[in-house]
Length: 434
Image 1 (cartoon, rainbow, N blue to C red):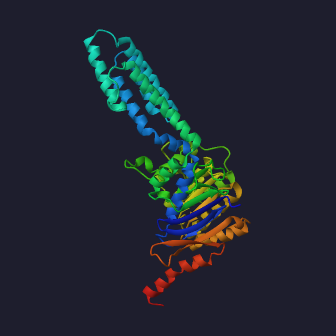
Image 2 (cartoon, helix red, strand yellow; image 1 turned 30 degrees about the vertical axis):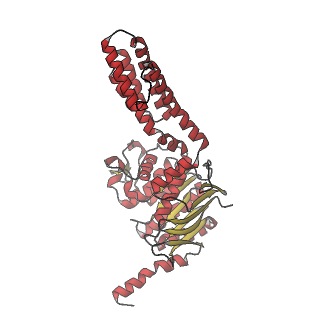
Image 3 (cartoon, one colour; image 1 turned 90 degrees about the horizontal axis):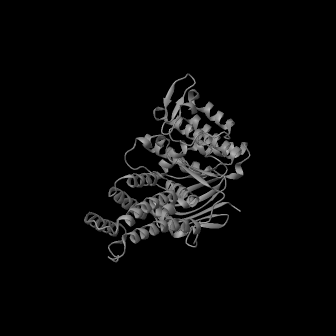
């Protein structure tokens, strides 16, 4: 059985596509034929399925931020030792990446505040009475929208806030356990700006995207997706003050993972040798947020200042060395030939074949290059992995402009060449030699 089967109908520029993922899948077509749309669909479909806990956590963040603002406001009303402890809990919650840690820290701060309230609530002090009235209004405004009974003790109000906060943790745990499709689909449709009604993606025959799905299964064939649409984004996200594409940030986060000991030194050495001047990622000079290279002549340069072609190879090298590339990884690449010298295009294709053959990395590639397409076909044949390679070509729909059908052509690349050769016709037409 084919591990991953993709069926797409009426998704952006894609009129129809039936695509199998079982090794190295290459799609080709003119600009605007929907290649990037398919790439992004696959990236987010696998990302969200494999990281369902994260989308479950993100779904409760508005409620949790509301709790955080309340805790911060209440902390500002206190003085003395308990105020310092509350502030420490609040800071711990704000810095935590885990929803559970955030909630536990907020609840600890609220428990401290409740102790203060119990101790002072019934004291005959006009200042306390005024302050507690203010606290009631703050809690009602931020949490309960003034629907509370006015005579309820303030300590019970805080207990209700604590229960509400703990309920958020239980909600996340419930969502993560059931892995409901509606939350998953909501995230996909928002990020892709498409209703996905005509999309179905299945693993070993079991769909995880599609109208019949109720719960998202835990995936086994692809457990991590990586998307490269341009090597130019490497290391640059830390300099951007404005929002960037989510997959750009994801890629840079992956590149900052420390080097693992178990990576393939053979492939790494080959990539190093291919890169002009022996440039390579230097572990001893790396630290979070800074990516540097050291040339064979000893010159150290920031990756941002290096040639774009070097960035392209270096991306593969870093993903290999930090353990991201494995048999359960889908590496999605848009136009890997961009910015590369023809010789390097062939070298890049060979590295892809090596990563598949030696490690088992799966690939989904969009390409416009005859050199790249040819290299993938003939190198895979020589390396005896051609059965894992498949090609698809986008053809314009005859009944609808700007809409394309993706046709499986197996390993026969002649139809791709025929579509590419139209450029020669244009040169002949405009150059006058036709």
